[in-house]
Length: 144
View (cartoon, rainbow, N blue to C red):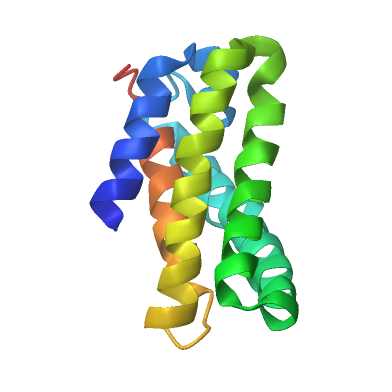
């Protein structure tokens, strides 16, 4: 699952203009961007998104409609939010690809959390945080 998530993230990074990504704020900062990147990666985005999408939306919809529908719905919302945020700078096609990739990642994290981790959002948070941190490091050292 980590490989799948990382491949999706790397595809998005190379497909989009680096300035459209949230992690572009760390472009060229090198090591001095590490502490801000850690805060961004683990708290600002990953923790808040995992609490909202998998912890709140996913669990509520799963309890009402069953896990399959609830997980698909939270993943779709996760993908749509990411696509909408990129639409004005990335265009329709790139936004659609981002929606698909982030939706699949959200769906996978939903399975990881609920079916493989007893309902805990911690594994999804760790995976999401690592993905965001890798993206930030790519920006910090201008590897894209």
